[in-house]
Amino acid sequence: KQEVTQIPAALSVPEGENLVLNCSFTDSAIYNLQWFRQDPGKGLTSLLLIQSSQREQTSGRLNASLDKSSGRSTLYIAASQPGDSATYLCAAYTDKLIFGTGTRLQVFP
Amino acid sequence: GAGVSQSPSNKVTEKGKDVELRCDPISGHTALYWYRQSLGQGLEFLIYFQGNSAPDKSGLPSDRFSAERTGGSVSTLTIQRTQQEDSAVYLCASTWTSGGAWEQFFGPGTRLTVL
Image 1 (tube, each protein chain N blue to C red):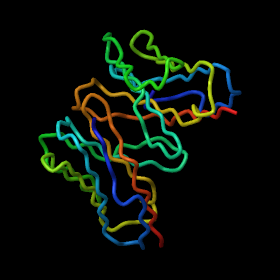
Image 2 (cartoon, one colour):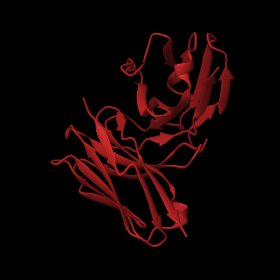
Image 3 (cartoon, rainbow over the protein chains, first blue to last red):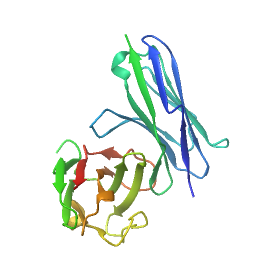
Image 4 (cartoon, each protein chain N blue to C red):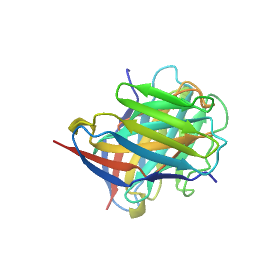
């Protein structure tokens, strides 16, 4: 049974810092891994999707990497801003998405 | 529409009543998923539909939960005889097809409160 874990559970940093959010999964037989952002009281916004054959994806200040063999993905946020404050969720896809419990990020000015 | 829509956005009901939650996926998406987000439980898969195939119901927590998808588009999640532990945000997502190549796009969710 696939289990997805995210570390840290919460993170509070000053504006401008570069951040690394970690995601690990127990079953490496995934088709893809997806990173989402969730703002309080809102749905999920897809940030990046990495196919199993890929090593990384980039979008603006975000970079996500995938190492299937070790069951790990990281989301790198460069030059963090207060608007980045949200909960970040990773999800591993086999035939459905299995979500981690999220990292709650707060970026203060 | 431009994205996945869900209705109602909020639902308050009394224990024991039945509720229906609706999801309108993105036009053309053949795969539709329901998830539940409970306080302290994270996001969990409930059920998914792919085209005309039999749905994968493996995540439904009890036989009080059921879902249907009419005409390959709109889906309704029904919870019968609601219990307080059913209180959660119910999220719907759609994608072009299952198989992992495509992003899942999520609706804003329905917040269900069972008193």
